[in-house]
Amino acid sequence: MALLALAEEQGTVTTSHGCDTTTVTLEGSSTVFGPGGYKIVRKGDDEKTHEYPNPGAPPPCIDHQLTLDTGYSTTVFIDGNKEAAMVGSKYGGTENITDAGQTTVFVT
Image (cartoon, rainbow, N blue to C red; front, side, top):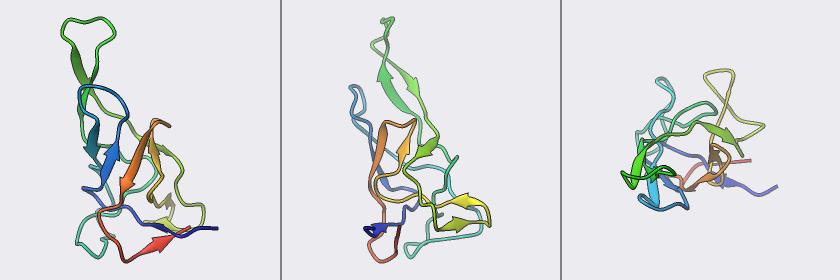
């Protein structure tokens, strides 16, 4: 099993849609911090609100925010019961954490 960087708040999320092609992780643990001093992201945390193409335009873009729900660690838990996020974890099953915000702590 590959080791992947543990995701901190302010890590990069690739949205793969128009309007805003990237955003950042937003929420994380209030008690567990990574090496950069940012909160560790967990299953159930939200990404930063960003713009998404409006299917009923105008306007061409609308606010959009998803919750981390896919690709989290099955072996590392934060605050006792929330799975840790890492590079490759996804918000809404589609928006991918591509930069964890730190490069020294890895999980599976």
